[in-house]
Length: 525
Image (cartoon, rainbow, N blue to C red; front, side, top):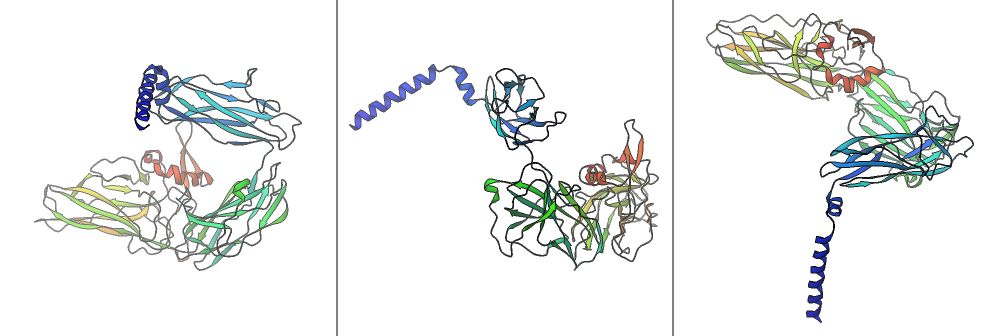
């Protein structure tokens, strides 16, 4: 019996190999070719009621080609047969109810897709539900299908807006009331409340139905998160409030802070609340839905605190003709951390080169300083008298230091000379949250062997834009230069748009320095 099994197994192996040789090459290509996945921006669509044909809900899809290689002749289709009886589309759909986009080749990686708009037909009952299936074909690969759920009606949760606060002292506690409203047409089976704070704030109390974690900072520096789950049904047209305010402790390092809250609808398995320590936080009915809410609210909290930004210099020596290295630095000695996202006028270091030397090696994030325009030029030209260094990241935790190394060539017949590193802002303004100015400057001294004693280089041309205050943090309004469509500069006041610029636009302080050459920044941080 054993030998017969061996013979049968051998025969089966030969037969399998023969079949593999006989199979068409196209089958092997399909098995080994690229794999393309369809991904949806939103796989759970709600159709507004009453219908809005001018602003339909969008089945918005894109592609990811996992490879290997380019997927050829990729054609994506949307099967609308499950919903066609009660929806209209913004594109003509064939009689088989399958809409197909033109085929194209898709290289490896992410690729743009397309969309099709859906609106509910008048009279369709609220809660009517169906699916739209997206699938595809490729001449040399495989396309993985996906499905979008479509429901007539929407659940739209908003939260209350909290006023900006100024003057809260370290050691105090802020009590923020939180209200959730459903301005949609369908109920939410439950809700998850997402709370986030910057590092200068701490949750005063922890609740059993909340999960606490530290996340990557967003554009506002928000990192400390609490996710609180409630199985309370949020009815359309109604509002609900937390049974107690969210307490936030103002810590010793608080300075420029944010608190955000948003409400996310839940259903099914998502309704299971965590079971942690402490009392449970709950929701109670609070009347009709508020009409002035927002999807996410970010409260700006300026604490009554200071941060000491300190310049660091260095002394080195060499002979005429030598290239010497000097390291300058900007540090935060607290007590507050610095995360000023309401402006692009961030902490910076202004470097004045000793007169007996020429700057030949310019570090990253440093550019030539234009004293007239009070900004960096974005250029790293050697031989300039001054450079502005813009640290990245712009946030400074207590104890953080950002260092910059310059290569200085000692000039022929040079004597010992001294330059300067000055703590300032990207536009040469005084940091008004820094009340200790005796360490704002540090010497950069190059001693020349055999040379005569030199005199200090004149100090940096950036001058304080206001007198040193004695109170707490009092940031001033910033003026931001923007380019209009013709390329001219237009002045705009600080606004919520500047907040976004702090995360994405502020990264262009060095690269786009030339844009603001003609604009003086005289306002205080």
